[in-house]
Image (spheres, rainbow, N blue to C red):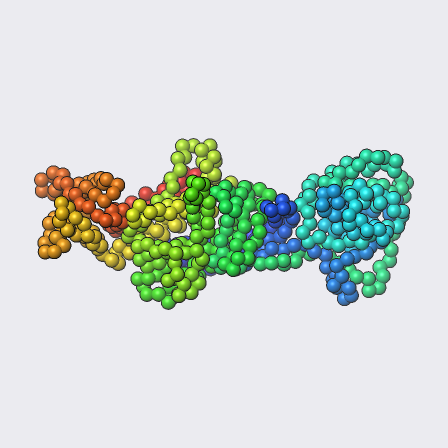
Length: 536
């Protein structure tokens, strides 16, 4: 059903810490589903580096004359063997027209070259059948004589029931009263003469007679630069099975695309995501040319943010996150120019942010399947969640579509934080103890230093390796346990901060960066996402 183009001859480009997936090209037929009406029809997807194009089928005139005609009037000569050579589905009782569901090769309908699957029957021998039931259209066609003139119009949004398996309930006799099913083919290809004489020759072609072809035509396109993919139902936290939609930066949507299998769904999800990621990387590279070395974009992209309503129900909204220079940016819409960076909804200093993967409990393969985590060969059902804890106990919960996206956010959060720790070198916080105003400095080289804010006299100093434990009261007071290098005794230091959460996150960031500077492999070994991907 689909075909992937060969990867580009050159190797994938790198951004530090990031390996690009080759750009995907892909085509395939899927169902476009309207959740409001419940209707669905077949469309063809065409994926290129920058655009996802949705194509619909139409019958076009390929001869010089009559190019703009939408209706075609065709005369069929009923054959002794094969009848009219077509089947129909649908009818007014199902609020759809009678539609040609099969044209049998070599028989009367096929020989005209003007009738196609998906053509709606508008008239039979001049009689309008647009509002006729399935049985009425079938009866009219069966009893129209040896020469039948029908007027048709191709439905670009052909009903999804055309995809049901062919299965005529059987050709009733002329005296049969059995009704035909509007969802199954009523065959008009077996009710010719009972003789077994060869079918008559097709009529000679008429000069300048219009010629028609059924083709996939571009209906609309979704630009992939800064586009987002969503599988969530509107206003809910449930995922659609084997379906997603692509929404462009300007709001143009692919509509809900329903895939025939989990494998097809996973393949398309990854291919579209890979192309969006490549275009996002190009945008990052252009942005970084205009930014100073200490204010570079490390990573950015769409996520779904979990929001808790007043009634404790949960909804999701699309949110754009960016790791740039010293900060984590939270946007409602992506920044498309340098000026847009000052319009962030929220900005947090990376040293005071704690990134945390929502770690699933995965004791066995069955549990992984129940949670939606699957082996790469069998799709990527998600959701894949992480949280960002900020100062004063604040927190944001996000999810992404693919496990690979979660892995990227984890590694880039880590990298951006370590870069900021090394850039700043140290951070100092005002604190107090027993009525005395103090300052605590967390320094990448020296560790912890506490000094009097007025006299600047150093009260105590410890290396990161001397910190053996800590506890806090959940409000503002923290107890730090250090080991004296000479006596090996544990020494307790207590301090109070206005924003204890920010201080604890800063301590975590500096210590993690310190460990990473000594043993980079240690941080990789602590990656929750990598552990899961290996276990899968």
